[in-house]
Image 1 (cartoon, helix red, strand yellow):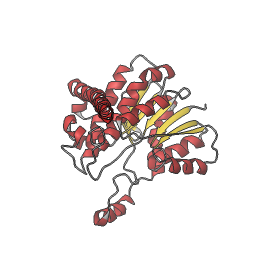
Image 2 (cartoon, rainbow, N blue to C red; image 1 turned 45 degrees about the vertical axis):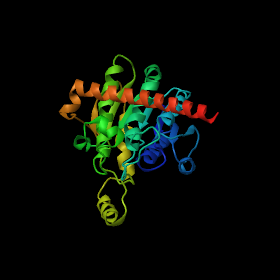
Image 3 (spheres, one colour; image 1 turned 120 degrees about the vertical axis):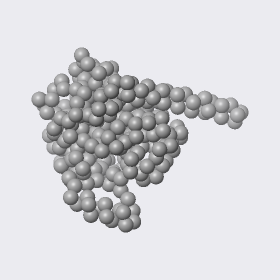
Image 4 (cartoon, rainbow, N blue to C red; image 1 turned 90 degrees about the vertical axis):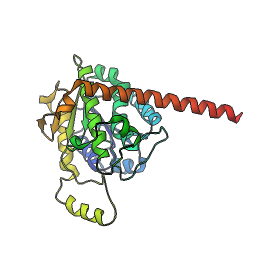
Length: 288
């Protein structure tokens, strides 16, 4: 049966492999990307371009995320959404919203898109798949510090953002109970992509190690399975290590912790945009 899937970060790595596999199965696709040229090149490489739409946008700012959600809201009914876009930062970058960049892309982007579109997902019976990372338990649980990069680490920040996002993913599963919409998280395995790429001696060593890792095509198998397998219809609020359901770390099973992460994400997405709006209005007045 032909279905409509939305894939974020679709132009490279696992995202491109997911795109190729879903396209080969004949599904309708909407590809959300920041690099329009790379995504158009990917589409041209597919055996058929029929039923494939590209949305360009930036998930690195709150305004960009909301614009993305608004564009997604105009799409035909969505049977599946794969949140694949992610950053593994090597340096701390603070966005125009005053937030650490990977915290925005990895955590707030899927959170805000899900929040803005959850009534649509319930109506469409969308199967949402959140890409995560098996190393999330080593992340910092302090969402306030992670938000602004006070605890930034080139090694741990990626894990921290995935940890926080897993908490809100499970809360969405609770919110959607009783509806046909589902959401699950998947660690696709350790995959050979340019995520977390380094330069110099460390980079050369990492490239040697990566030869032992899964290919993007192998890494795409698990999220595609979670998105399409008939036997997973109606299954929600689960974490998968590739194809096998796995238990979450005890702290992620704590409703108080999950609620604190949820409220911090909600407060951050609302307050930061409100603050930016006031500054813009004040700046415009001064120009007069």
